[in-house]
Image (cartoon, rainbow, N blue to C red; front, side, top):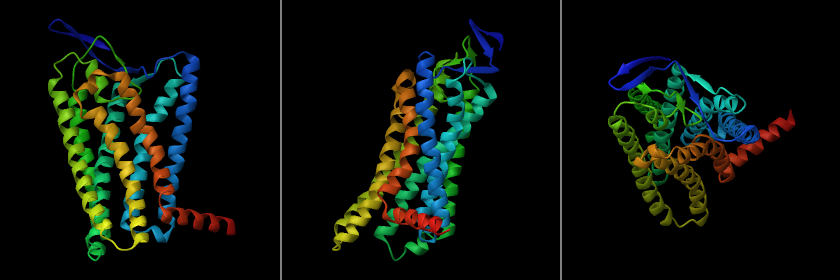
Length: 316
């Protein structure tokens, strides 16, 4: 780090940052390493299984499962952006990350997490069209439209990531290079900045709040219409199947949006790093681990595909 003066503050040109992570001695760190490694491996295996299963099983080649495969890919990627480094730090005394590495980690995390937020809204719209306009569904959600919707989610994620990364990592930093977190994120970076961060907080809460509230409205409106349509159905079996499929998506949406709102759409998030670490574990690791379980345990099509894949493996 090379210091220079900025008024009465000593501003540091940071080359390295220290991710403090979770408190505790060697035994606590070893326990956390074991726990996080187990959760991460389950998340990786679960999401890889969903990707392979949907790719190989022709019965799952539909828009809903195309979006579900995209969701599994995002879950796999954004947890992998964070946890290999976090796991290494549990066993390391230095816990150092370069400034460029920190910015890169945050850029990809923000891109993937924002893309997932938008994709969940796209998945709600897909279910709305499938349930409320079934005759138009093959045309409305043809492969080219699905691909454009996923691409649009990535473009929205990239735009938010560019804004958040450029605003955050252009700040001047003072005296300390210790980040009170286990990965690079906006709130802990703002904590060690020595400039007025009002604009950064407005950008964080404004853009993230707009994304979360906007996508939540899309989900709520879509599922409002879906619920009304399902309740008007005469077939009890059809109602049960639709409620089961849509219930899986609503469970995933509620978990993901709820934790993101706590972290990024309320002003108090920046002032509570300990709470932020716990919440971050949920949306960066626990939810990516749970999503494949939620969609497989509550979805008969996925269960049947798993059975067919097992039969094919047994036969060979």
